Image (cartoon, rainbow, N blue to C red):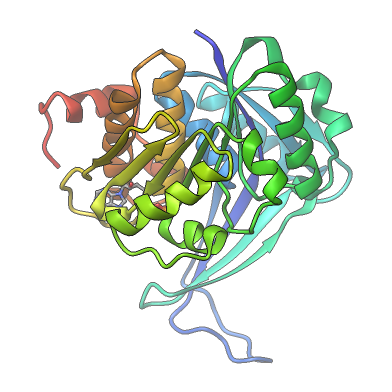
Length: 307
Ligand code: ADP
């Protein structure tokens, strides 16, 4: 089985719960604190590995006390971590404050995620064994663009999740095999208003025209739409579940779909697998903690568990 190579962010999420947000200059007491490994790159790597794929994570942690924890956490989910650099300075941090109503404030400190260039990781990527290379928007933009160009040159499909949403250079779009994004992201990228499956399919068409081979727009509890240059468009409904926390739903979907595809599953099957994995993820709290195992996904698909 070929590998899924994720080149992306690795963060520690520092989550603190408060009754109400402090005003500028105010000091308040927290109700609780959590340290949760995160980052879109790492989340997608964990999702692909728990889905049964062979996964290589390429990126960077810092020289702070979180660095080893972040690496151990990935390794603990079965991700190959040999491609992770250590850069002087702090690891990627997300400082998250959540109030009683569930509203949050997030400060992202990219740290080592933003501190590596393509030349430093090029030799670490398992190009010859790669089924696909997965990229997001949480590392340096130039590094991402260089990975896309080299992957294209080597014939390795690029899977791109443009999150957080930034309009990509038009010249990069033809380098992308599979673009997976949510409604907000496709709105930013295409400029089209997207609400629901029909709009999503229309906006996806713009990305296909611009050179992307396959587009998957995730629509929360409305499922997802897939459109391709092969002319096949499908709407895959979401599994009906009781959602308690949608954090990392998109990351779970992407990792699971990539994993299914690396096993040679046809696209419809890969989409259903991803829909099942992400449905399970929203029934649980947390980011990586909510990502299900392959066994759980298969049980949902076979109808032997109901959530
Ligand atoms: P993001 O987390 O990037 O905003 P979405 O909210 O579109 O992504 O969710 C990604 C996928 O997770 C959806 O395509 C769907 O399969 C699944 N999902 C999200 N919310 C729900 C829900 N309430 N019930 C079932 N599945 C869901």
